[in-house]
Image (cartoon, rainbow over all chains, first blue to last red; front, side):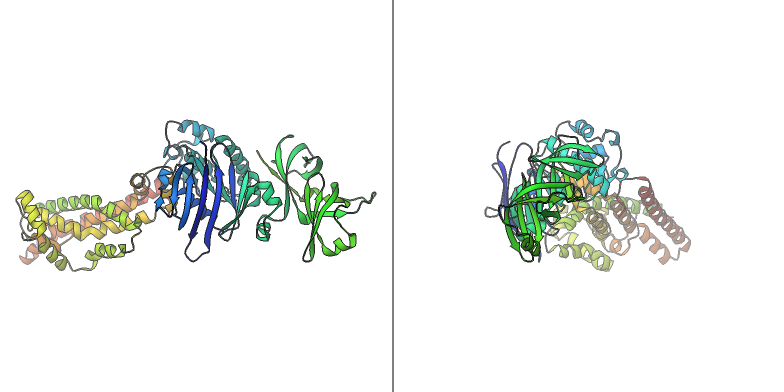
Length: 359
Length: 227
């Protein structure tokens, strides 16, 4: 199906801040938009308005050529009429129905057995939710949401109800799953790693307002303002590829530079795509002085693109085949006389590169 | 022993419970899920029989269903009969009198159903009415059973309303509690004692069965949430 989902809504929630969000997302095919922001930013409210569970105060929500909500014309379509798969934070699996009957609950056609098989639930089909683990409940809820063949999937903090080891495994599963179902999805999360792992594009919400939207790397690399920067963290996020793995370390290639990072265990085989995340605080800059032994694995020749003073600190943007942001003290900046266009060495410890695998 | 009166009371309780199930479920659903601000007024009306003296309730019902009232005239036009001092009139009174004993447990059961489950059902394309029958009602079965048992037991023991609306006609409106009263007035203590004992036994058995059944349901079925 062609077209796009366009959301432009305002809502005031009790005494809280007014929530204002404008968002567009292409329909048809596979794309995951992450709605990211700190707790209480209004992400869930936006998701509930799209699902039809809450009504905005004003604005409009359109899906393709259908109007789901229009404040001016008093149109508010019921959730039943929107054909949206909505997954709440705690999955809301019906406790009085077996796994099979949960999945079949809203099913159209006879795809239930296929879904059970696809979600590895066939052997659990006659169990009750009470007998299932958190990860299994999530699979039931997802299979159930997909059974009515929705046009759009809305996932509210899909991994937050899981314990840490399960969350790591389910994150990989979910990424794979969202890629295979070919249904556009909006995923709400406040976890940066989750946002990086799952999202194609990202929309940042802070204090009820949607502040910035765009491709994941670009938003993480170039935050529009200091609030967004604080929410996402000052960090370089680069698409990278696995070159080799050995002895707990993984070598990745970013543009033409190679970096060694600590292997988190779910990195994937050589050739796999991932994000390499490097916090600006953990990049150090050296003058080109050979012969000094260092424990840092990664020493990259770089050229300074810009130096910006930020209070007691200075932000130095480097070009080492890819853009890398470093934060140094103003004092170091003065002492090293860092200036635009100069050649330096960027040093990154293997332990401070975070690897986020992507399907 | 007044077997006729006992049989009449059981019949009255049975039909009252059945009618309360039919009107109590939608009423409780409305009270639980309606966004109307004035629904507290309806809640108060439903709860009135809890505090109103049965004679007052019986008096108003008598006026409302009497041959000169609109309801009475309609009933006469439809059936040719009259509601006061008839089994049907007694049934109307019993339903109103036991209304809170059905609606309140039903409503508290519905309110305890996790709102997220209801919303999940809506998002799966299932209508509000179907969601009630497929999610809300099955998850409220313990509360629904409680409401039915309470209605049944309460109707079995009612006295004042019955006397006001039904009078004391053997086989038509003389319920078991009225027959006990009659026996005591006639100093027929042995008969009163037997009937009382039977009523005590039935009441205890019904309540014991309910609580026992509920406990078994909790223990056996993995189905209902523990809250």
